Length: 342
Image (cartoon, rainbow, N blue to C red; front, side):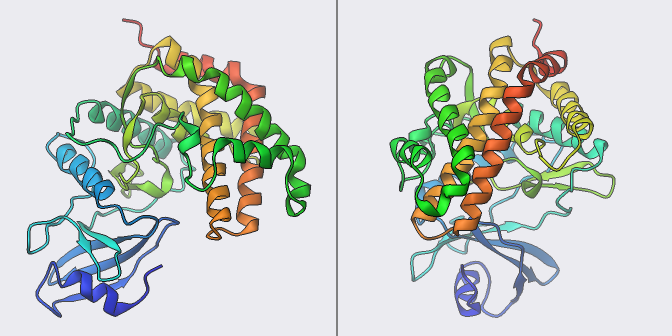
């Protein structure tokens, strides 16, 4: 991660006259380093991309944001700021890529109040409906979720299957969970031809509590981090959001109340086909499988720790088991709230 102030100053000099800014450390995720920047009375967010040095990926993300900014959205999105040379990103001397954005008011929600969750669902549906109209003359940087063999460059699907079936000794305690994951991966691959027939469009792909902001009333005020936008199944957006509501520590009544609240909000903004709704349980599993493979790949790259991989193995297995037990109820709830009856 970038922690060197000289490094930050090098980037900011591309945007502002030297020495005219004050920066402070921001909350950084697994993929990026963040700094909050003040220039006179204006606030900005500086983002340094840590997981790649691919200019085309950043250009694509920024093109999406510029296109969305032309639409009458009821929520804010990050606005890329141009450098003094008219670009929306900077490449540092050591190859890092950085972008500067307008600061957006709000806080990440806990998603514990039903009103917040309903607003989150409504916003996710509105964002999906808006992205359907975005046309970018550039190939997406990322593949669809269902192309699971492309999840992480350090491990093929066969590598993952071999690991799950015959885990090394340090993962011996995870053997039962890895067997669950193995079976779900095999089952999922059999369903890919059917999934390919579902409606496709641009999707955010990583909408969760850390990538939205709410105001004091709990209403979503902004959607953040469009780094992983790609052309994918329209219904994948819904599955990504729902997966986070399946928590082993929560009471079943709480889980279902949260899911119902989210779906009622989503359904106000967007309707889905019967075939899309039937795929929701499978795609929630896919989201969990994808996240596990992502962190397994990072472990192979010696970026993520052993304990983190074990944590995501457990989470993935729990969600897979939950879906197997609750598939029909989930489909019924989705149908009641989101079926397109035209």
